[in-house]
Image 1 (cartoon, one colour):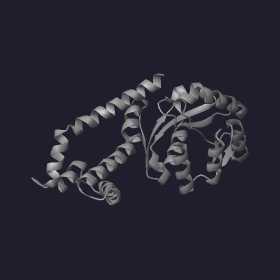
Image 2 (tube, one colour):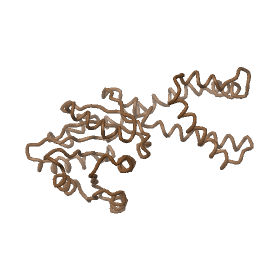
Image 3 (tube, one colour):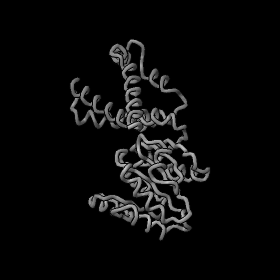
Image 4 (cartoon, helix red, strand yellow):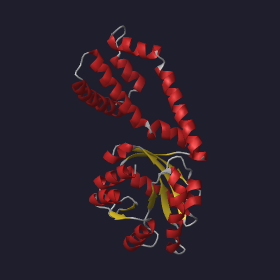
Length: 267
């Protein structure tokens, strides 16, 4: 996810100076190829940030480690932030399943936390991100985080209690679209199409339908009805999907994913 965000921000050109810290030398080279200042540890990255920011504390730190890595990475960040003297720094967390307050406990009191949950289309500046303000975050912090992520897509502000539902619905949403494309290509091949051509056509159809949904004032239900002639081929196909319980399956899938997110946040 960190790589997707960096690629989107580089493409948008809205952030003049980007630095990353990653222990993996290969990832350091990959980020350097994108024009980032790449570092092996948080301390050296923050030293670079302090040397380039307009005023002390202006630079923003984005934490993007895996949840299970936060107990190790958090104290490293907290120690490095001590060099900010009396300055608090905005820290944007994209750590999945960890509340803003829990992130602050890991990275220390020199931080003001804004939590962001993006999805992977941020890499092509077509993403969607949820924003949650931590208890010490200011209006200016929220505005800055929103502006940063609006460069790579839509941003909506939600309450912390809604984050698990957002994560499994929207954060995971691209996976459902990719699964649909995969299944339609398989079904098309089973019905007699060349699978490669079927997938090409499905990609174009999915992109066109998404653009049509975004441009139309009609609801998804109405747009679907516009394609579904009574008694026709599409109607028969959708009836078959309904008989198979697709609607209930989606609800159960989202609820299961939401519950798993809650389990992870407690672990």
